[in-house]
Image (cartoon, rainbow, N blue to C red; front, side, top):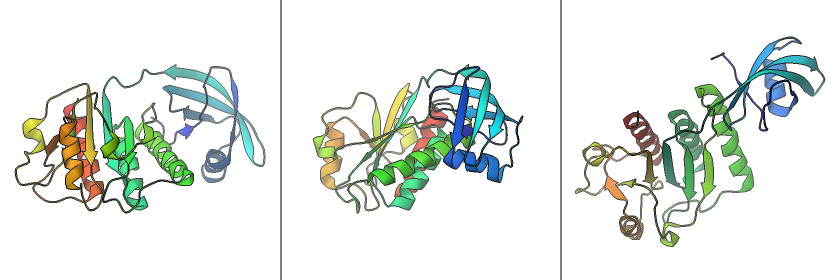
Length: 235
């Protein structure tokens, strides 16, 4: 893998000429000091990896002819991180590290005790940009899907095994109840944790409450630890 990969959001096809603008153009030309004739590597977050040659550079854009394109199948195993919406900086860290660790789906929902109940379009765009940056860095080919979900009280079913972070004394340690499955989900509460009513809903949906650690973890720590454990155990 080269030191730098770049992102192009559309279809990548051999011999196609693409135009790069905005942030990726700035990084490639102003930061990396790329020149005409240089070979650049791209991903599109949809399973394609391409190499292209820079053909021309203008003031605010450049043209690249794609030389070789490889395609990769979507991950066979799903890791769904269902995260109650936390403060923006914490969510940034969760999206970045979750992408690096192999989370395939982020489900963001307003927790009963969440300080923030919704995300603006600009905040959602920022999360996508963070996920793209992590995708380029970690060598993945498929961009995780991020969805905004309803409050837990409106959920009716779960289609795969789910766990949730549980700080109650009787909750088992995660490793003691873990069962390997192609698709696994994990619920993480907001900064103040799950409300008792939400725990009742999660248990009624069949989710299993588990301890990730003997200590009480911050929401971002719990999310990253859960994603890392699941990704490792699915190997």
